[in-house]
Picture (cartoon, helix red, strand yellow):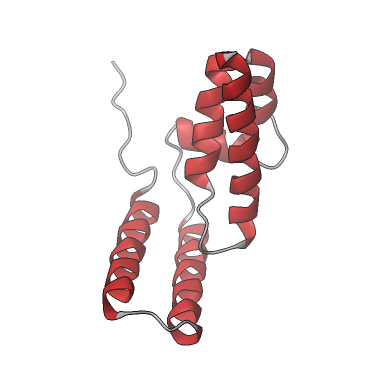
Length: 124
């Protein structure tokens, strides 16, 4: 039973991660990483399919192997993040506290993207 719950949650994570590719509000990476974790615990076949997927496979492999993202891609990602947040601030009527929280989250995500791949594991 636990296996099927993990598989169902993994599929849901892939769907949410896929939506996150085109929306700045929903993150992609955490959902795909969670899907990979869930599949690794429930289905070797689905885990392999996810890691070898044409769209997400290289992305996940690079993340797991701590491969740096090219500077241009980092700048594009951070630009889309702040464009989405700016549109949210402009079009939505948000309280000051919500804006402060979103700015802090945006700064944290920007810092995460900027440092991806920078901390390589030392070979033993």
